[in-house]
Length: 480
Image (cartoon, rainbow, N blue to C red; front, side, top):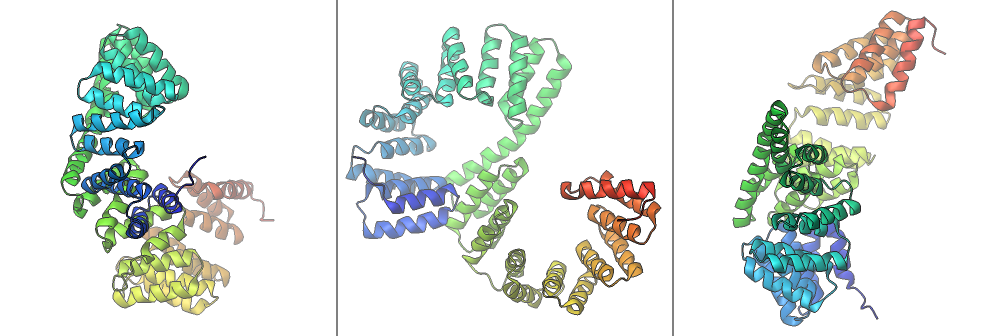
């Protein structure tokens, strides 16, 4: 009979899966205060601290788990991983060996044992563990690591078979392709190496080793210029990777260094790695829950994922009512969710703290607009345009109001003001095209529609509308 899973642990795992590390930590701490001898809770706490980079606390909880139950394979395994992260590789091997001794079908455990045995130079033990891992479960990473080890040992036929198995499990495994390219190089097949290494770098354009290996293969194949291009790309990618590695070492020494963690988030943002961004923002908030910049960035990350409720919840967990940025972000999200009353409160508070906040003025205008308070909306949009950094949206909003009132000349003047503020605001050309067409000026309408279609940021939702408008106005046909 399978033991029923602890519901607190299940909930914590769900929170971790959504990168809500602070919430998971609070939940588990509360449960442990009631049941401090729960092995599952200690393992879950260890996992949470490991995600947050607090390695000493993770180790303490894993050790507490095995002190209660020495047969807990998960605790031994995870303890080994953290010990390895701290550079204690021999102790890590011993811990993971205990894990697989307790659970002989533990495929991931054998894979970890193989990786750690390679680090300490125990290749026979590593190969035996990796073979056990591939037999216990068909994992692309186990086959891939086994193939890499067999290449190193000169067992090229074995390596070829293992890497083929890895690609059979996952045909777009960039690292398996890279290792296959190295195998082709080792056996003197540089043309084949170039082919698979190019596939590898296409799949992983931020992988430093792939470009370095590709440069070597291209040079061996006699394509010196392509080799230079690949090496230049390697140097470019390596710098970002080196910066990340340097900051991660700082965080290993001091997990609570919020400034370093935010620099790391910035580097991951440049690489488009949202998963790592979320992880390190959550870690920053676990160490410093009132850190407003980390909270704002995490909220924007959720907003970018089109999850405004999670974005709002992130901000509301630690209210910062005297911070204009916090009030504006909350008000904006409440406006997005159409909670107009609450949005008004927070946007007005933003203006109390920063009277010339242009976007807050514009958004208050939008609140008024949605409440059919058109005169009040006009006042707020004009106030936004009078600020030192007026938003193009405010001019567009005023133009829309004048279109509604039939004041074409005023509407056109504000559309043109929007373009003077932001020449890249492509939506203005679409709106101007519709207004010119409505007034019968088909030549200018066609020009505006064409500018929209030629812009760098046309909205796919409106492209068809612009194409149809362009076709109508070029033919000189009236609007139906």
